Length: 338
Image (cartoon, rainbow, N blue to C red):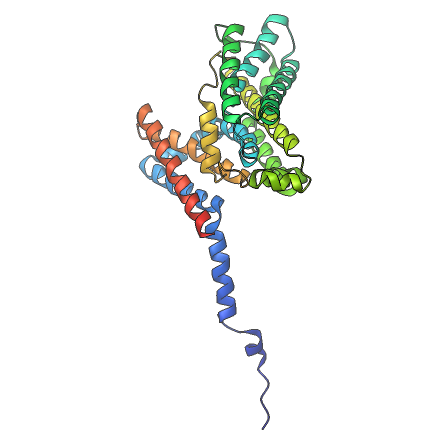
């Protein structure tokens, strides 16, 4: 008695057979397990709730204003993502942001230096400050938390010595147009932010340096055994973090056309919050630039939304604190399931 051959439909597993269903469940689980997806859903829920309460939240003017506000934190947070993934921390980025921007403006005002040249000088000084942070951390074997906390006060004090008053009204048309103008009716800061986020994502995920950053943060001893120059990788991350902080300051100066000696105070905590909310682990080895971008968006949306519905300043800070704790709990649970 011959055994009949399976039909073509049977052989192909027509219908939602076990194999197809298992693949669907696996794909769905992978999607829900992505930190970026979780924070995106959370962001959409918050936006929807605020939009229902205040329809003006979704007005074109408000959305563009939020994009401009978000650019400052997002640009700084990209650099912080590299550094935190490498298992280091920089608490001085807020002070570097203010000091380097003030230096750029002071050079232009007091010496007549072109603002573009002043920007180059400020970025160079920022790179030097990041290098000092990195060298003391890696060569001196001092925790980066302590090193950058000290640098925070040093740089902030230097800014207050440099100028006791805000610096404003420096004429330079092209500088303001390129860094704070509009393109197709959209603030240029948004394009700068997207350029840095996309570039940071490609470097983080598609280059040897990005792999070395993740490997260094995951297991420093193993990274050394694998031939990765751990100290140089960390130095590069410190420099990148400081340079992006200074560039974010330049973007803000170009928009406001003024800078105060105390500018940037507290920015380091907002930057770290955006990175952590986005899913980057404070224990190193695991980071996401896209998640950081969404984290910065969430912080901006919450601040703007609370203003829209009439929330007090103190309520904003309390609500943001709750969002940070909730996001970390969600990411921690996702990590445990994995």
